Amino acid sequence: MRELPLSGVTVVSVEQAVAAPYATRQLADLGARVIKVERPGEGDFARRYDTTVHGHSSYFVWINRSKESLTLDLKDPRGLAILHRLLRDADVFVQNLAPGAARRLGLDNDALTRRHPRLIPCTISGYGTSGPWADRKAYDLLMQCQTGLVSLTGTAEATARTGISVADIAAGMYAYSGVLTALYTRATRGTAHAVEVSLFEALAEWMGQPAYYTRHGGEQPPRLGTRHATIAPYGTYGTADGREVLFSVQNEREWAVLCAEFLGRPELTDDPRFATGSDRVTHREELDAIIAARCARDSAEELLGDLEAIGIACAGVNDVAAFLDHPVLAARGRWREVAVPGATVEALLPPADLAGLTARMDPVPAVGEHTEAILTELGHSPEDIGTLRADRVV
Image (cartoon, rainbow, N blue to C red; front, side):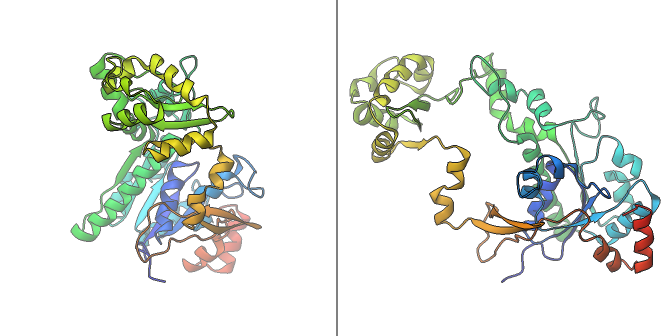
């Protein structure tokens, strides 16, 4: 097997929850050595979010494979010294500690840049490390509320959170891409740039389209459930067998085909209520009534067959169990076995395929599983390690 792109890169991460572990897991997928620093005993609190995966947290199993777990009490000077010894030879440091904690420990970007000039430090915060909200705690749903995402998600009657930790994922993705960019810049220009990402600003970027729509349109897009605020028809419709199908018409050619070959009403193409995309959005209720009546005549399977035959993008509405059994994932061989303490699980390959390379899919570590090996590597004797354990430094 060919060497992975980040083989030889060492990442040290004082991480917890979702955003930072998601960023570092993707670095590990590409071959980086990721040393995850956890609290002695309990470890990352995300280990206890749930116990559904053979006694382990579904969150933790998802974003912590291929890492080494080292336990350190960073409030003890001996633990902090061990961390700095690791950072002396590391390439990247990632942390998402509580507001102010990194600065108190001397682990903020400025302090680390001065102490370890070659290191690429990456800070993931809630609202940024400066500004009026720098000291506020931040969790995913708070970010969904603060950016206005919750006001767009749900039905006309009620708002709803997204079903996944979208702010954490956004921040993790930007931290990952920021670190990759910094590694590239250091390799090509010799400069190690520090990286900072906030959950709020990561999700704010994803709010770009509704932000422009609201600022220039005078009101924000409405909440429409599975309907699309600026495109019609685009949404789910009930079928004769009690299921739902979703389809989307994105241009005038597709609209003409839908009218003539699916609805059987070619005259609707030139109906002034539906002549343009904006007209169809304005008269959405009338249009939906026509489409709903057509969809109610046939089963989901029949409707999907008809829509696919005329080139209209469509899909059934899967639950998570159906997604897990999706034929595309099976046919493309996207599942791999990954070890967790005491068991194995199926995990999806990373979505970016690099030709000729196979992603790393190593085990999810137990708390402190690699502590002794890492300390030995740093030159600690068995007696030293025993003392550190007895004093609960590791």
